[in-house]
Length: 215
Image 1 (cartoon, one colour):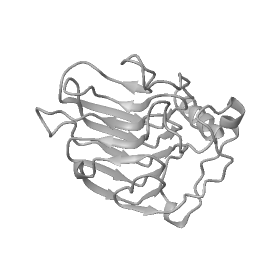
Image 2 (cartoon, helix red, strand yellow; image 1 turned 120 degrees about the horizontal axis):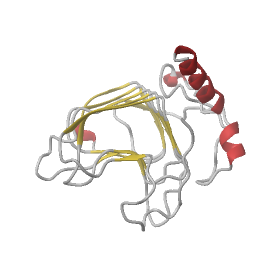
Image 3 (cartoon, one colour; image 1 turned 180 degrees about the vertical axis):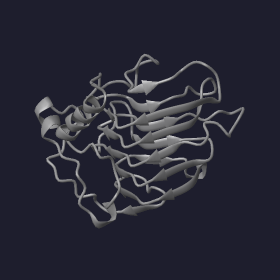
Image 4 (cartoon, one colour; image 1 turned 180 degrees about the horizontal axis):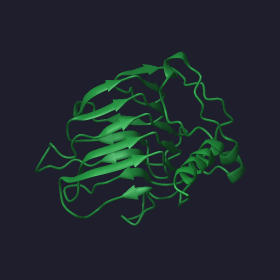
């Protein structure tokens, strides 16, 4: 748990750029990756990126109850594979929150909340602010989502989530701004949607609950 910090000018870097999680070897159709109750950002290139175009892909990926904060390139990304359009396959994106400012990384004209090829994916009960959404044809189910700014999200309502705030306003927020932020949503369509990790305190409470069950 915690916040990652990296260089803002990541667009010009090679694959040593700063990501929350990237897998760039091991071949296609790797399986079973679970990410739950995590925070990615700010100041990283990709949030979750288990893939490398035509070389690496993961199937059966679950990304749940997680927060993506000011990710500069993509919150969630899975590359296309020209030799096998079925992979990456069967990703579950559920109860996540992706909050981005309107400014992408230096050198880029846009950034993505989700950039996922393959097939058989689902996106449910998640909240997305800013960024593009690709590729809609790869999703077999979507419901209960909220989006504001950028591309529409499948199964989503276009409305401001009404985060409690204060919110980071730049791609390089101070520690004080991060500690003070509150991503608790208030819109009617937001009921039951988004990550439970709204604040620094919610992260600390989650850690305490884990410590209590694993003395």
